[in-house]
Structures are given as structure tokens and as C-alpha cells.
Image 1 (tube, rainbow, N blue to C red):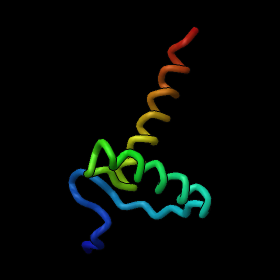
Image 2 (cartoon, one colour; image 1 turned 180 degrees about the vertical axis):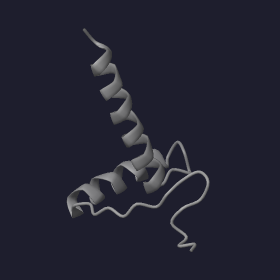
Image 3 (cartoon, rainbow, N blue to C red; image 1 turned 135 degrees about the vertical axis):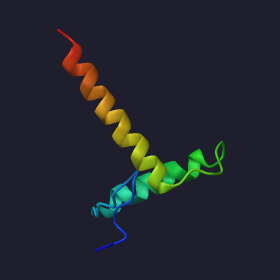
Image 4 (tube, rainbow, N blue to C red; image 1 turned 90 degrees about the vertical axis):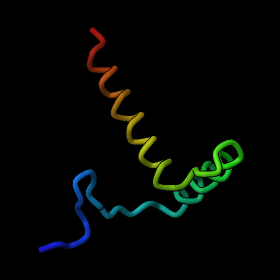
Length: 63
């Protein structure tokens, strides 16, 4: 049964953001669009998540 939420590379996941956080992310995306016209909300969130996971790995590897 296909739901449209999965493909071979990704899965959709619903999430709620506080209004203030959405406003801040949208403002950041707008600033980023000056240098990168392809910047968008989804890419910003994926980048932020990747950075968080990388920082967590770095913290765990420290003695």
C-alpha cells in the first residue's frame, strides 16, 4: 500500500515548529538566498539537523 510518504531515499515525517522558530528560520533562509537563490526551508532544516548530528559525534569522540 503506497502512501507517498516513502521512497528509496527518504521518508516524510510530520513535525510542528513554534511560530517564532519558523519566523527565525524563514528570515535566515531569506538572508541565505542572497548568495544561494536555491535556499529553502527544507534544505535549511536538513543542514541544521546534519550539523547537530555531527556535533554530537564530535562530542562523543572527545575523551
